[in-house]
Image (cartoon, rainbow, N blue to C red):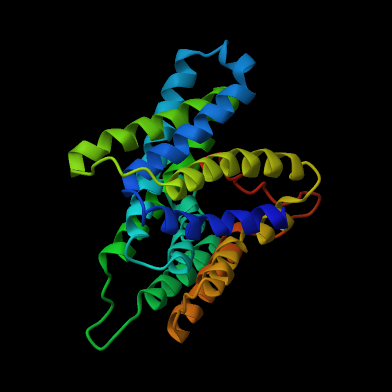
Length: 289
């Protein structure tokens, strides 16, 4: 799980490199097309029993993946990959708030503390100045993407037990791909000139999405939810380490903000043990990674 989380964190830098050679929406379409096709091949037998409910659930979740990772990718054109990773981590404490609104599940006190810590972290990462907190286009788009990613997790919880998540996963990946490709003419994005860079990055990320999901599902059979949460919280840390190796440098305030965000993730997700009852399972990452 630690190795997979490190791979997960490295995807931010890979995406940033790829969009230097192609438009963001084309690359989003490519990575999820590859992930969807690989998933379809692996789970082709399950697809024969596809239902209307599976298609509708997959389409709904696919829209959130398209918005979440599309906006995140556009944002990576103007901000560093490590900053994008730390801002994106805000989706973890944001999920309980959306569950409160959609599923009527009020968050606990620790969750609210976690949200507060993560929000302070966001302000620090954004870089407060004498004029106040000024968000650039990249930061703003990335913050908006976290809402969509959190909505993805909430929808998965909403549909869990009502549909087949394997079939839904294939549908959601392909829907996200089609919507991304369809956005290209709407925003005036042309097909990129062929490059082995965007091709290798797209195919690699598509394959990594399936590998990450399969490995996490297998590993969480023997790893407690609390320990899994701690391991997953290291994703932006790995992104920061990899980004630093690549030459990125976050300022002291941004690093302090990153620490607040990670603290917010841990506080909001790790539930205190109750007598004769273990903590609730943490939300599993989806194959969209």
